[in-house]
Image (tube, rainbow, N blue to C red):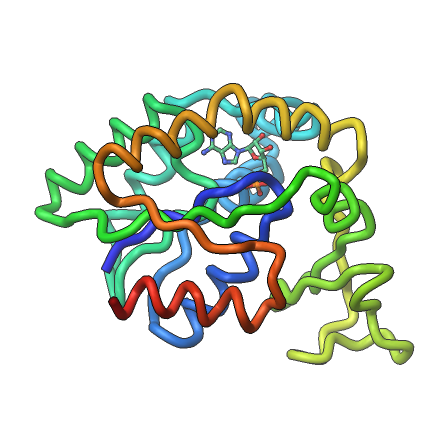
Length: 214
Ligand code: AMP
């Protein structure tokens, strides 16, 4: 089963993808994570990527399609979760071609619906465990007083350089201009399913499970 998680920054795509990896042995393909890894490579490409990401703009289609292509060549396990990809119509077309070449299909595109006001609150104050990626938030889920991750015991936590109000504005604008047309695209293809991304995390998990098991 191959699915796309679609939604604005902060909608909970990463959190839900991690859960699906755990429960269904699926493979999370997050272009954001891949690009964050690329920016630490010390190459010229990494430096360009870092500047674009920090501004909140989108990295070129060529770069992200190339990253995804490489990952699709590996083990498929329980299927792929595309998290943060595609973000443009050109990327959506490329994904369709890549899957067709592999004789794979796209089984569902799940939209996580969230209002803008909630996104700012969710993103500003966010941090993750540097070891396992567990997500924390200064207000709603603070890092424990002993400084240890509740999941893995890790003691290093990271904040994203683009998790600030200014970059978020650009990221949202990019979402509405370039990514939200994909909702119409997948609706016409009959693949789009929407869930309430503002519901309690467990309810969102249940709503996604319902779509996948239908
Ligand atoms: P994310 O972790 O998905 O929020 O992505 C962080 C940043 O990486 C985005 O703001 C973009 O600059 C870049 N990025 C991630 N995925 C893509 C993509 N599919 N296309 C273009 N840029 C991307």
